[in-house]
Image (cartoon, rainbow, N blue to C red; front, side, top):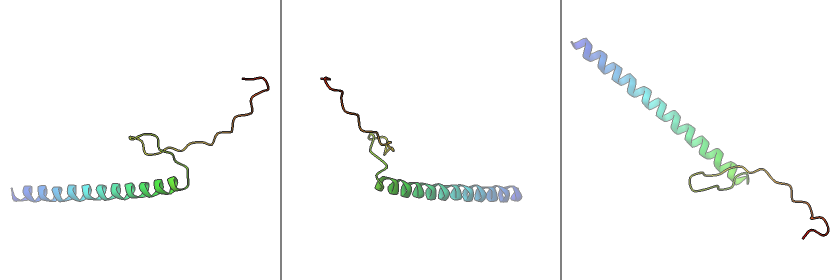
Length: 72
């Protein structure tokens, strides 16, 4: 019975450590993505879309050509 409790305790420690490592990796990834987004936005490559979506890159569009003579 004692070995069963020891095994359960070790499994709990292992699962907790694994969860903590995954949490820290996710936190680091989110921090890196926020930094990349800040650089991208500061370079002028992003425009706000809506309250639910932060930003999107917009391709530059060619200016429209002049209207033909007589177009109204």
